[in-house]
Image 1 (cartoon, each protein chain N blue to C red):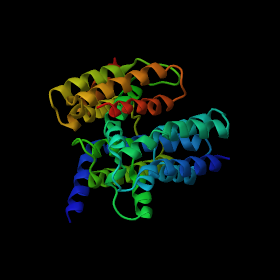
Image 2 (image 1 turned 90 degrees about the vertical axis):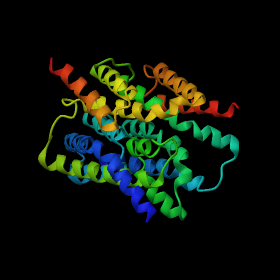
Image 3 (image 1 turned 30 degrees about the horizontal axis):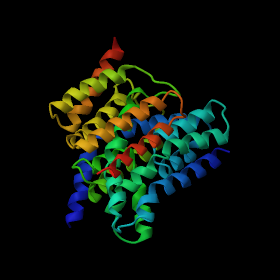
Length: 99
Length: 216
């Protein structure tokens, strides 16, 4: 039965990922649709930040990730490179977990 | 030629992230074995689904004795975010419909976010970053099924590195007022829904914030 899960999740996920490039293609979008698509990226990034920081199973979980994000946020504010931002966030969470 | 350069940019952009998909991939391999996927099944899922959170959700549910339907529904809800992700990057994919369908499989949270880091999506970066992450994710899964857990990703704080990465990639957008408002509304929708909605649904609902784009 696990193969049913592997097959169904695999095929449907592939369809999800291909949906934009296959349906919309390279054609020019109507201006109103284009302006919605334009702000999709910041909307989705903001949602990812929230779920990956406090996301749990049907709950909000406040743990070391929050401290990591705060430290990473300071690094972003100081215009640190991506790698530095990630290292700062990871190290902060890891250190707090140690103690 | 130019494209090759851009793809190389993408590979380089994703290199700092390289350790994480490898370790999480190995962790998935171990969990999938426990859940009865077998090594081939575990690698097959990483190669076809190529989306960490959904794979972990499906394997965890099966491992806990949950049903096949529950595992499928949970995984697909988590992956439904790839519809708005895919719509947002759609215009950058060239070539035939079949080629677009194949190449779009390299869309994953990190490659998608990295491809948009300059404020508009770059095709080469998406392919380069996506290909590197794909190899590491599938390779990590295979190694996990053979060698067991390599190193607990959470012990070195990798779960905190990802929200920070997405925040760093979000930051450049926030200078523009409409994008800032959209991001705040999306974050609010996500937080409000997190305690009630099944995992994955809050992110999809947050895509509605982009309707702010209709206002001129």
